[in-house]
Image (cartoon, rainbow, N blue to C red; front, side, top):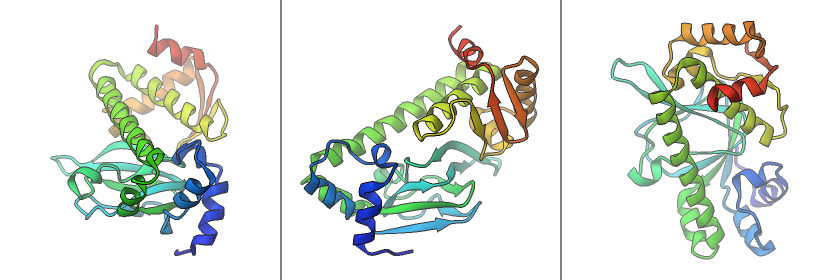
Length: 237
């Protein structure tokens, strides 16, 4: 869906996700110019791909609503999940270096993204240094997150991996105004297992153990965290 710039000025300047996906401390004129970066909005249905591995890189995408997974095809043809992204986060950063997207980005529920042409970001960054710094910060955050996942997969037991995953999910959701103790999983247990390097059966068994230990209550995809401290102790004994 293509909208005129005026409508986007209202949406971007007053968006409740502004602090998550836009630079802070901008002057009014700088904010006005950054408002103009968004070329259009795109709506996706559940399981629809925003972009595919190998497609030409042209834009970054700021998630307005919904949750996505990024994944690549493994040697045996299965999808290897490399991350989960939610409202306020940016998709497509992996395409900056190689000029093509290096993974698939797939909506896990009905979603909407803001389309931001990268050429426009490069042009405006020359006049608004805060925008360039912000892009660098986002890229740095992704690198740190990827490094954390590598450590996670290399040194932690199944319970620890799942505890880290749940704590990270809670933290990110809370930053977006959601509950500190309840999670509605948009991803399947199989997708969680793919991301954490665990089999589906191991994810299910570990969740059941957490429930038996009184750490959380599990109702299909709805989780209620009963003992956050217990999860923290698994990660930092």
